[in-house]
Image (cartoon, rainbow, N blue to C red; front, side, top):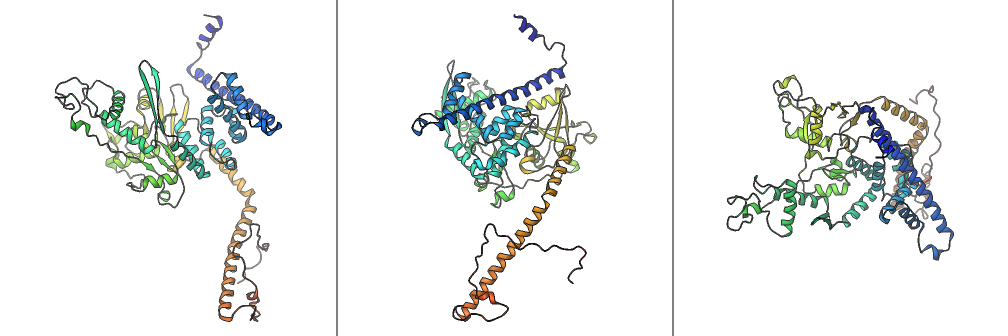
Length: 533
C-alpha cells in the first residue's frame, strides 16, 4: 500500500460522525461546482465551433456542424460514447442559452447535478421564447428541493412546464408514446434483460397481470415474488399458465394428470385500477391545470379527461375523524385515501416509493394499552413510509416530527436535519405552509415590488375598464345606425338632423380596438372636493 493510500485510509479516524457527513456535503457541493465548470468550458468550445462553422461557405458548412465537431472532441477527450458526449454538449448548451439562472446555481454548488440534469431533460421540448419564464422560476424553486426525490423533482418540473407550455407537454407525451417498444439484451451467464416501454395504462395492466399470475401458485412454491413474476412473463409469451413448483403431487394449483396449471389457476382476471388526482375544473373541461397519475407522475389536462371519461369519480376531502375512529389503530378507508393522496410518495428524504406501496404509520406511536393516552389515528399524526424507512424511523435512531402543515422534520442520529413536504403541496395546494421568517421576508419583498408597480397596475386597470366601455358604446352606436337605416333608409339619402345624435350619420365603427388604443387621460381627483350629490 502506498503512503498516500495509507493516509487516505486513516484521514477520518479522528473525525466525528457529524464531521464525516459534513465532508460528504462539502464534496457534493464541490462536485456540482466542478460539473458547472466543465459544462461552461464545453459551452465556450461549442460557441467557437459554431462561429467557425458560420465563417466558412455554405457547401463546407453542410458537411459537419459545430455541434457535431464539439461532440467528437468531447467524446475523444473524455473517452465516452458519441451519444453520451452529445448529451453532455446539449446540457452545456442548454445551461448557457436556455437555463442560465439554473446554471448559476450549479456553479455556486447550491444544487446537485442530477437535479439540474432532470430540469434539462424535462424542459427539452419547451419553446425557446417560453424559457425566460421557466428559468427564473426553476432557479427560485430549486433551493427548496434539497430533500426531494427524483420522482418529486420530475413532478415539480412537469407541473411548471404544463402550466407555461401546454403544447410542449402534449408534444412530449406524443413523442414518448411514439418511442414505445420492446428490447432484449444479453446479460451473460445465460440470462437476458427484457425492457418494454408502454403507456401508463398498459404498463399498469401488465403489472397487475404478472402479480395475479405470481399469486396463483400455492404458498409452498419456493420461488420469490420477483422470480414468479419473471416466470409469469415467460408463461404469457408461451400462452400458458404459471405452474406451481412446490413439488407436491396433490398440489391444488396443478392438474395431477399433466402436472400443468389447472384450469382454475389459469383463469386470471386482474382488476386494473388507475388513480388519477385532479381538480374538478380540470375533469369538467373548465381548466387546463395538470393532474397526477398515481405511481407515474404529472399528466396534462387532456389525458386527465381521457382517463376520467368512463371512470368512477370521487371527491376527496380531508375526512372528519370521530373520537371512536381516532382511538382505533387502523385508519378508515377515507382517512387512508386522504393520507396517500396528500403524501403521494414515501415521506423520507429522497425516497420516491409510491404512497400506495407504503405503510401508513403513526408519527407518535399508537398506544395499544391505552389508546386515549396518545398516538391517535388522525391526519396530523399519520404519514406514508416505505417499509425500509418505516423501520429506520422505528429502529434506526431517527427522530421524526410532523408539523401542522404536513411538513415532516427528520433528524438523523448525528443531528442532521432534513425537511420533506407532502407531494400534493406544490401540485394541488392541499396543504398550506405556515409563515416562517424566510416567508415573511419573501412577502415583504413582494409587497415592495407591488407598491413599485402600483401606478402601472392602476393605469392598466383604468385602460381595461375604459376599453370595455368603449367597445360597449361602439356596439350600441352601430346598432342604432342599423335600426335607423332600417326604418329611414340609407344615411346618404336621408341624413339625420337630430342635434343630439349627429354621430348617427357617421359610418359604422370597428368593434375591435387597435392594439395600441389608449383612453383619454384620467381627470385628477381632489380628495377635498365634495361628491357630486
